[in-house]
Image 1 (cartoon, one colour):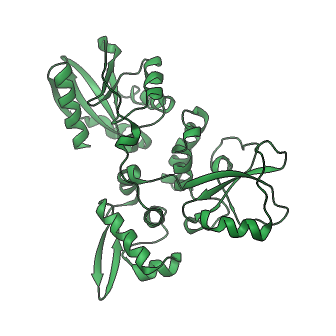
Image 2: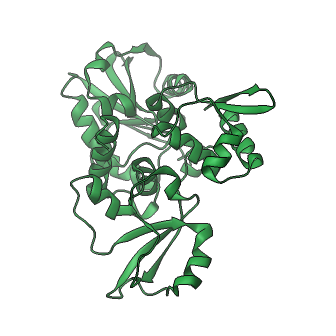
Image 3: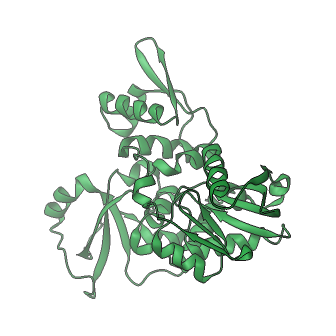
Length: 335
């Protein structure tokens, strides 16, 4: 977050003149938790005008619809101009923010402040350019299991391998991956490497978000099996199970990608057209979804990732609202 502040100060200084009185907003603690979780808040003076910066903790931010809702929540607690700050923005989301007259700054790239009559457009940094190298599938499983409360650390690579079904070598590489990204550390006890997550679940989730990937590798449509099918409820079907959103017309399920070929042959599963009357959507996952839940539905964090990072679901206000409800319930221990 410090780097974002410095980049913003440099950018605003270059295009407008000096930005002054940059300090954390002391009343941020009075905001709802979901806002504190999603943003850092700074009070600043720009062109001798006091403003509040609402800085996204995610490098790519949220959809304009969600940003608008969050902004409306902030202005209930702050009298003055609020400016949304994000590291990168797509041309589509930029257009939507401008249409909604939302003030925003993308440090080094874009400044839109209708409150000051300013619209300075330069170039738009690709979201793909700013995305950091993602965690491996195994590393992501280790991290999500910790955040979900399935274990406490330290744990040896041998113990983790036995629990999760990976080789010790694979687990050792995954632990190294987490260490390199500053998400975990390891210690050596005897001859074994042990994994330690030094942060609490909420803080770790916020820091890890830029490294997390969509667990869904591929989606396809199959004819609904006429017998028990070893898959978990996923996608919008799972979202309707955990929130107030309506259930989709077609059921969505998930299995581990590596199990698909064998399962397809064993159960004689047939791929079909999306519009077939007895079709279901099947997600093929990068990791086994059963490793993160003991229920017949996927875990809430993987669900959030699968819907938030799926391009076809972006800018869907109905789903955005349900995803916000999902995370509120998760952190309040209702899930």
